[in-house]
Length: 309
Figure (cartoon, rainbow, N blue to C red):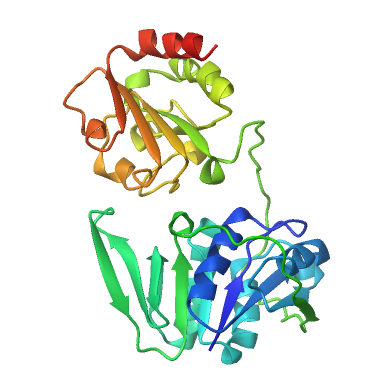
């Protein structure tokens, strides 16, 4: 058996989600190879080679692969798929765009969003917004898997894998890169942050959302939001935490003015410590919170900031 991890990277560095996916791949048994598809991506390849558990790094480097369009990356993965029993990618927008194409071409069922590996052919994944855990066994010759990264620890450094150059596949021509808007922030990236402060509908407005800034600054936290807050225009889309947003599992999650709809809980209930502030003592968020404060957030948040010094 051998597993292939389709790396998520920016041609210079690996995204943190790739390290969690490598851990999942190692648990499937056999050697682990990492596929780097890009342009001028030797730095990302070297970073992958330095990860423990990786036996080899396969690199496809060509100008038309610079933007890692899903059609091209899928074709590159298919070009080497015959040598692997498992093909994995993070359950991020990047991975979810690529692996269904690979699964369809291989005529196998994709196994999505796994949170544990029971055996090489059996995995667990959340269903019903995380209210139940399904155990899935696959009889397919090749298992195509997306990995919920919060379910696995990041692979450590210290590896020394061999780096092998691949012949780059031709541009499929099915899509073209138009542009990219990259959100810039001095705060940690939401998906990988150790501390997250999130606001909900109870914030009342986009201006009121700014009350969370001093708290996030004190804690060195990323800012998040519930879908209700995003839909109301209080926060940008890339802050959304939940079933239809980002799945996070930080050391500390602070929920301010969030009632705790099931879709939101699905995205953060695996956090190590959950602190909730809400004026409604019956709010569902208190059902998962380790610490809860019933009160007016506009009074409570400044007081918490003051106590933090």
